[in-house]
Each structure stands twice: as structure tokens, then as C-alpha cells.
Image 1 (cartoon, rainbow, N blue to C red):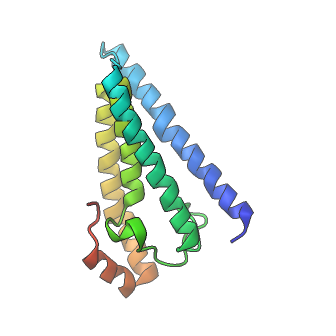
Image 2: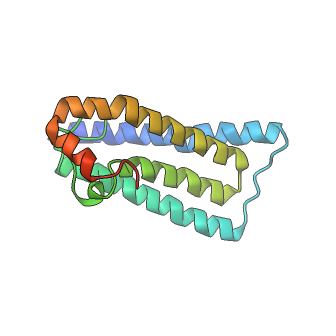
Image 3: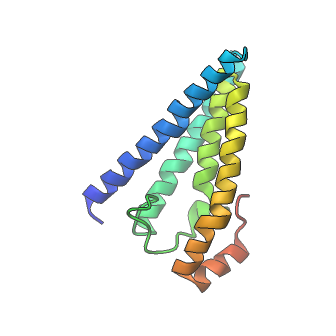
Length: 159
């Protein structure tokens, strides 16, 4: 796969990260402050949150690497994988990248001590669940057929 396509996918992922992990949480925090719910960061929360963020970022980049190496594509819809990725982290969960995303958001919750961001995390998790079940899984069944159906039998959706 050419470098230009990989870079395009990386920049797309960075844009989505900016939106979902910085911009939207910022507005959620500001909305909470408007209603009198202030963030309350503390050292233990910052330490625990940092662990979750680091774990989530690591999972995301490792999965991105697996999509390129094993899937011969990227997580980006405009440059999807050509092969089913079912090894490494994907042998334990069909959706480790989403788990990584949620780990980052939960880490932010701990780091800044924000209940509104916890509510945001719940809505994102709910969105991921419905997106995976009603959009992503049918597309993968259509694309990879029996190989994906067998993979679904072996590996849990989340944990």
C-alpha cells in the first residue's frame, strides 16, 4: 500500500481523535459548567486516567498497524482492509480499537474528574454498540462471508 494512502488515513484518524477526544469533551465540560457541574481533577485521578489514556492510545495505534500489516488496508472507510484481521488483539475481541477509544475517554474522565464527560462516554459506548451491530458487522459479513461468520462464533464482540 502506498505511503500517501497510509498518511491520509493517519490524518483522518487524527482529525477524528481531535473531534471525539478534545472538541466534543470540551463542549461537554463547558455545558456541565453552565449547569454548575465543575471538573474536579486530583492527583490519583490524573494518574489512573493517564494509564487509561496511554493504554487506549497504545491499543489504537497497534490496531492501526494490524490493519495495515494483516488487513492490507486501514481503519479508514476510504481505504478499508482487504483481508480479515483476526489475530493478535483481534483474537480476544472483535473490536479492540473501539475499546481503545473508550479507554481514552474514560481516562479523560478520571484525569479531569468530570461527570458530564462520563455521560458522554456512555453515549459514545452506546453509539459504538449500535454502529457495530447494525452497520459494521453486516458489512463485514457481506465482504468476508463465512470467514467472518466463523470469526464471530469464536471471538466475543467486546470482551
